[in-house]
Length: 261
Image 1 (tube, rainbow, N blue to C red):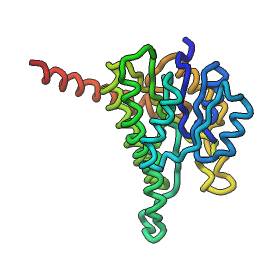
Image 2: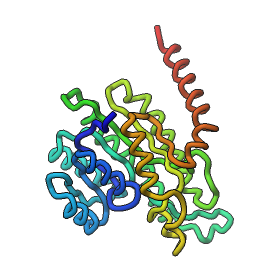
Image 3: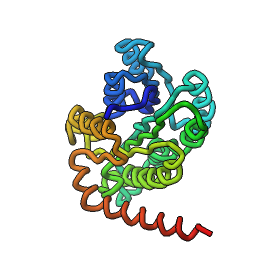
Image 4: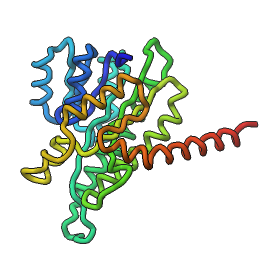
C-alpha cells in the first residue's frame, strides 16, 4: 500500500524525526510544506528539492497567538493540503528533588511545544479537514513517545506532555475518525537526534539510529496503521498499551450504547 497523501504540512521539519520523515515523503513524490523556526535549515531543504517539491514557512509553533493567521495564510496558499505531520518537540530535565534548579519558563515552553500548541493548531486546521471536499483521504499524523506510556523521572515534564498528547490522540481519533480523517500515532523509542543535545557530547548517541527508525515508521505509514510503535517502543505497546486501548474501546462502546434512545 502506497502512502496516499499528496500535500503534507510537516511541523518541526528542520531536524530529527520531522526532517527525516519529510525527506521520506519527498522521495514518495508528495509535496511537503516544511515548517520550523530555523529558516536557514528550511532554505537548505528548499535548495535540495526545489520549489516544485517543497514550500517553506518559517514559524514558531509556541507563538500561540500567531497560529490562527499562520494557518489561514497557509491554507489560502495550499487549499489542497490533505495531511499534517506533528513532529515538533523539546526535551529538558526536570528535577523536583532540587526545586531551585527548575526553570518554569523552560517547563512552560516544553509543554507548549509538545502539547498545547497541538490543540491550538488542531482548532484552526480541523475546519479544513472536516469540510466535505474532493480531498480524500485526509490524515493527521502525530509523533508521540514511548515515554508518554512509561515515564522516566529525569525528564518528567517531557513524559507528562507526551502522555497528554497520547490521550489527546486517542480521543481525537474517536471524534473525527468517522468523519473521514485518519489519525495516526507514531510512538518512537529514544532516537539519535538533537532532542537529546541537552545531555552534552554524548546526547545524540542515545537511542535508535535515525535512519532505522525512519524506515520502520515509514513502513507503518505505508501499511496504513493507526498506531506505529517503533523499535523498543513495540514491547511497551504490546505489554501495556494494547490492553489499555482495548479497555478504551470497550468504554467507548458502553458510552455509545447508553446514548442510544
